[in-house]
Structure formats: C-alpha cells, structure tokens
Length: 492
Image 1 (cartoon, rainbow, N blue to C red):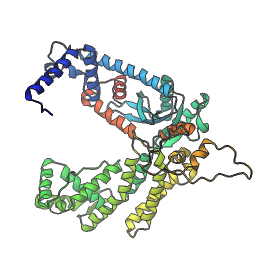
Image 2 (spheres, helix red, strand yellow):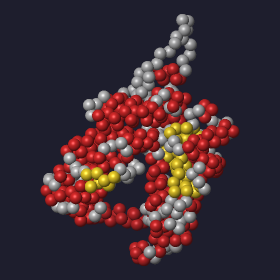
Image 3 (tube, rainbow, N blue to C red):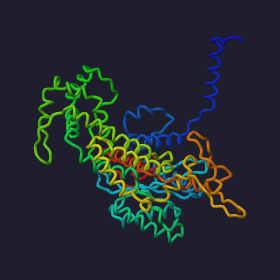
Image 4 (cartoon, one colour):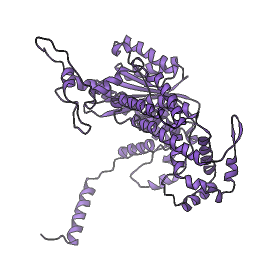
C-alpha cells in the first residue's frame, strides 16, 4: 500500500474539475424552468425577477433575466404540461379514483373549490394530486355540483370510487347529484350506496368542540393566563425570567388556541401544564398579572377567579383525556400513507376508551366522556350509519383479517375463490413483509388498491387552503383565480 501524496490528490481533483467543465453546457431554457420552479415552490411574487437584488445576483452574461409577464406565461406553460402528463397517467393506471372536496373563501372574498384525487398505483404507492382549485359562485350544493361535473368532464374522469367530504348539507346534495351522474355513465359502484365518506377529523372536531364548551372556569383561566403572557413582548420576557428562575427546561413556548380548532386548545393545555411553577411565581416579575386574573368577564357576568391547585389538576385531567383524540387525529390525517385500513380499529379503540373514562371516579371526566359517547353514536352508532368500505378496507389488511369459516358441503369442497384462499390464510404479524401484489391474489390486489386509497380526513384540503392563504397574501391580492389555480396545482 502506498499512501496518496498531496500532489496526487491535487492532480486527481484537477482531472475531475476538467471533466466537469468539459461536459457542462449552459442552457437558457433549463435556467428559465428552474426559475419558474423556484417562484412556485417558494411562493414568490412574479415581480421577484425584477428586484434589484435578484438582478445583481444573476448579473452574468449567460443568463437573460425574464420579466414578470414572461415568468407568468412560463408558469402557465408548466401548468399545462403537468396537467397533460397527469391526465395521461390517470388513463394509464386504470384504477378507480377517490376524491376529496372542500370549499374556501379567500381574502378577496372569492369562493374556491378544491378537488383532490387519491389513488394507489401498481407499485402500491399512494398518490395525492390537486386537480382543481377553481372559483365557484357559492358554497351551496347546486353550485358545487356544477363545478364538480365540469372538473370531471375536463379531466375525463368517470371512474370515481369514493368522495370524502365533511357532513355539511351542501356536500350531501353534491354527492347525491354526483351519484346520479355516475349512474348515467354506468360507473357507479354498488348503486352509489357507499359513495359518500364523512371526514373523520371533522367528526372528531364536532364531538370534542361541543364538550369543550362544557368545561369549567379553570380551563378558561388557563386561556386567559396564556393570552396575558403572549399579548406583549415585555410580558413574554418577564415570563421567561420566571421560567429560568424555576429551572424549567422546555423547548416549547406558550401558544394561544384558536377557538374553532380543539386540537390547538389541547396543545395550549399541554404546553401550559409544563409551566405551572412559572405561572405561580410570575407575579414577582409582573405586578399586574394577578389583578388581571382577579376578574374574568364572561357571558354570564363578572366572576371572581384565581388559579388554584384544583384548576391545574383539572387541566391535567382534560389534557390527558384529549391526548387520545389528538393522537387519533394525527393517525388518520395522512395524505401520503394509507389510513382507511385501520379506520374501523381506531373507532373501536375510541369507543373502548370512552367507556373506560365514563366509569372514572372523576365526575367531570365521566360527564365529558358520556357526552362524547352520545355524539359518536350519531355517526357510528349502528352499522347502517357507517360506510361499508371501512370494513372492507380493514379485512383486506392482512394483519386484520377476521376469522373465516367456510361452509363445506358433505360431498366435495369445490373450487375456492380467490377471496376464500386469501381469508383462509393466517393473519400476518404487524412487522410482516406481506405483499398484497402477490401473483396469487391478482383480483384481491386490485381491490385493495382501490379501497386503500380512500382518504379518511381532510388534511389535503387544509394544506391547499394554507397554501392559498400564503399565495393570496396582501401583497399578491390581485392574482386572478386562474393564476391561483395554476400556482397551487403546480406546487402540489
């Protein structure tokens, strides 16, 4: 062995650089395409290309900086190319497509409908694609129906399998009309009886949000405390001094909840609990803290209140109780991984958890669990209220197959169907490497790809609307709906 010398290392490096320089070629079109991708992915205004800083950065003779109008045209061209490619891909997979639909109103007071397609390809990869982010005249059912039909005709999609929406009456109208349209196209599965899936995260939000209204004064106090600390930078600095004095180590900081989002309330409780000792000594750093909490103006009038040990204990119990719902919401909110195969199991676990809480010695906890139990019955109380695809998705998961007993004739067994063979096999372990694409189950594998693509939550819509808020900020409020759709769809 002869160790390399510095000279040999430099020589090798120069050879590599020489080869790279010899094979490199500047291409104006490639740079333009990369610039368009940057504008879309980083959500930059078109006028970014005309800023002095960007011009200075790109002040090299090879690259010609386009204008904002040219960049706008380039974005439309990329949108058109990707749309054609996606149309071709959807025709090639020849699988049934699941849809999610929701509406949103921008800061321009324009109503938008987001139509998202979900499907699993032959390699068992789950895909999520925003097909349309288009303006609509109203959130009413008839306007939704018209927009959905136009979108499906544009994409030439008649193989719709499932539609996941929340339980608003307008979506009930839209799904019913879509079912009639699929009947005309002769592509409606099971006469449309299982076309409609209600978003699970929306149901959980309704269940939890209702019972949060019933919580006591102690929870309202915590919200007021957090609000006080976060209302100014000076109060936040004083609170951090109290945290440091109490030797509290926590990477998180207090966050104020959004009243319409119960999960943000849970996160507020979960974080505030970790700063209990800091709140107890906060009055040493801020003399107005206790006086602020001394009077809490409520809808029912003015009530005297101060944080006590019982209040913290009550909050800890509520936080622990909501943790189960928060984890469940995270589990079913994936847009890049399958969730419907464990949906039924999650519902069963939630039901068992509420029964356990109802029997608790904590009367407040028992009362809250009882209220939630009644709300759950409204949506999942009987088999008739549940979409049958939920059960099929669970059975097709090789880890969840039910015990199957086939009736046997006294004579011969006859020929077993592919489903019989699949169900008669043992369940796979949680860590098993079972491949549903096995050549032994060609029909089951295609059925699984259709069913497992069913989305159980609205996470894909929320992502699109969050993107819409950023794209249509006050500095870009003049973007047309056509341009908004282009940016959001290409980014997705």
